[in-house]
Image (cartoon, rainbow, N blue to C red; front, top):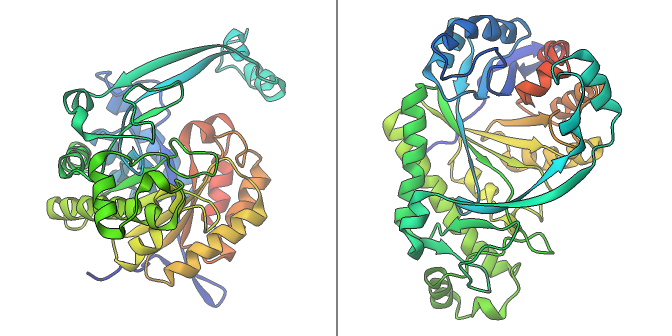
Amino acid sequence: MQPATSNYPRIKGNEEMPDRLVLWGPPVVERIPDDSDYADYLPAWVQKCADVGVTKIVGGDQTRALTEAAHAVGIKVDPYINYNSFPRHGWARVTYGWSLDFLRPPVTAAEARAVMDSHRPIYDAPKVTTTMTDFAAKNPQFRSLTRTRSFTLQPGDDLYLSAAFPEVRAEQNQQFLDTLAKTQGDGIQVEFVLGNEDENGAVPYGYEDRTVNEFQAKHGKDPFELPNDDPDWLQFRADYVTLALSEMRAVVKQAKPDAVFSTTLIAGEKEDYLKLLHDWPTWLEQGLVDEFYIWFRTNSDLDALQRQLSYAVEVSGGRTPVIAELSCYHPGSFQQPDQMLRAAEVAMDCGADGVGIYRSHAVEQLDFWPVLEKMSKL
């Protein structure tokens, strides 16, 4: 299997630079996908994207209508499915009431934006909502457990199934195949999101019998006598994630050989990734992804961006395109236009093969369309 290489050259001075500009998120229009006339509202929105230089939409709305509208103006569409190291199939999520719930003007009004920009949000009334997928409910034997080995979720806990089970990996693979078939997208992205971590930033799960027994057979050590972040124990669990990713790629490529199979994961220091079971240097070495995205989500520190992205570019060594995913949506993200543009400049200077903004709602509400246009010309 040959690793993918970048094929998006553009001349800048004496250098070849990529012309890729990515936008994450669904169309921001006055209809929802279930509306009968939803497709009528898409051409104007995708044209707006094309006018500022967007070449790919990631995520989208999981409809074929968006893919067709985007293709009409030369934009590619890659839907995504968010994913944890071991697939999440439920949670005991803690939600809050917020003072912004009592915003007086309509949230879409200009005066509402002025209030939101100056208001310091206050939270209250925590509420725990527990969910579980049908697949998890029918297959408790696939649960991934923490050291307590309890099947009862505590507030804030996620419910994971173990990637050690082929049935769990197969169920997840089907989700990717179904999404690709439904949208007729150009590719698909595995969006690695954060889940439960211990006080050292390591995943606390993987203590189900199957994983524990297989680790003991290989290493002759008991995980219960090791810290969560023991290097061998981390690597062993991370190898299951790599296996799952390789199987995802295989089924996607079998269904659509020219599909772009990509991953995005949240940026961190090089020692952070394995704690989350993200052994992405191995992914690139094995040619498992066609494009590799680094997501700068809740950190707008430019020094961190430069350091973390440079490391990714160095590890890639030109084997796999590296794209910087810059958020203007999350708390702590790049929400000032000049800040976002400077972040994109730093990313390109680090050797990124492209840049993009997460996500469409924030681009619309913060009026970052001119920023996208400037980014397209870097």
